[in-house]
Length: 198
Length: 220
Image (cartoon, rainbow over all chains, first blue to last red; front, side, top):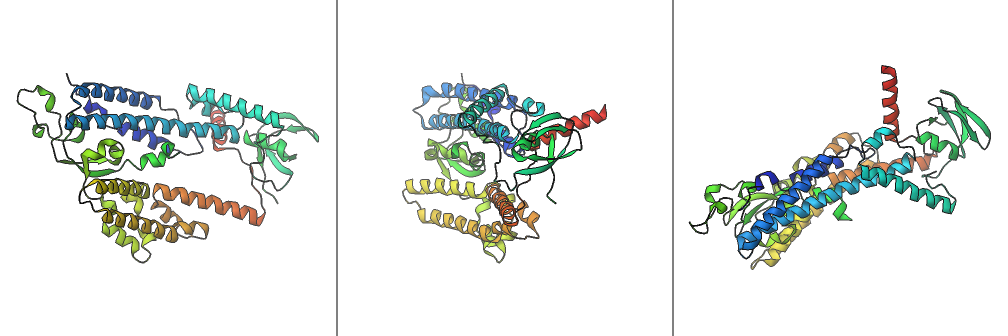
């Protein structure tokens, strides 16, 4: 008995919406994981499969073959859309490790799926292990620096930190001259702000 | 890596006009074909034929439908309006590359154009009296259009440009990528040339989180 599921299938439309959603979002942020859309697309793949099973016995007929190919192509399209979506998000999660560091804000973490949070942790661990092995912090100085020391302003009370020049008390709105590699992680976390050169 | 490219994915989304050579079973409701025109194999059939697309049914489908083996049973008819001769004529006119709004015609104009030409070429090569030359001429027009846009629009990003906002609004998706890359390259050059160095800033995610925290604290 043939199903009439085609009316709910809307070949590839949900898939295209999902990809547009991630493409049109700000590339420097991670929008919330759209689990509903992913679930719907997986269900649609199941419906396409059911249609293929229904049509398969008459596959020798030309018109049936065309129907089969259309449903098959729709499954491949849906699969590609989900992979594109996941790949784009994974790229942004990786980028967060480099731009934000280990201390991911809760708002960013809340937008990730469970799998993405696990990926972030494992990616960060792998990167840290490699940096320990080569004894180099690769996340510092992503562009060639001009000065070894930079002037920074403290944006919030952060307590005392130990630097190679001694202890520095980071109180809100105080100005300090710090070594670049010591200031960078705190700038990334939003604790310090680099001041413009005079 | 094009498989995972979102722009490449979306480039196959625009619709093309086609004819189903042998019809298609079970797709009438998706394609908007009238159930009453659905061809019945014979009158003894059950109602499983009312959802059939008849032979030579003309409709529009997204280009990605033709990426698999389906292209052998479906004929592309004409080219979409975005690739009409008047669009190419407007691009060839003086200052045409700058003035023509390609984004409103097709968000992924050049990506879609490339795939369209490939699909047409395949169809004409397989046909008995296929007109491959016509397809190659279309391909050349699209290439010239891109060259025009490159020289009149995209190169502007490297210099002073008074109407940068207007140009940016008319850029297709792939042109915007090039435009943004040019802008980043120009900024990097100015940083190197004038020796100011990169100012370290927290990422947008961190700034947003801090701002939300401050607003929450102020609200309390």
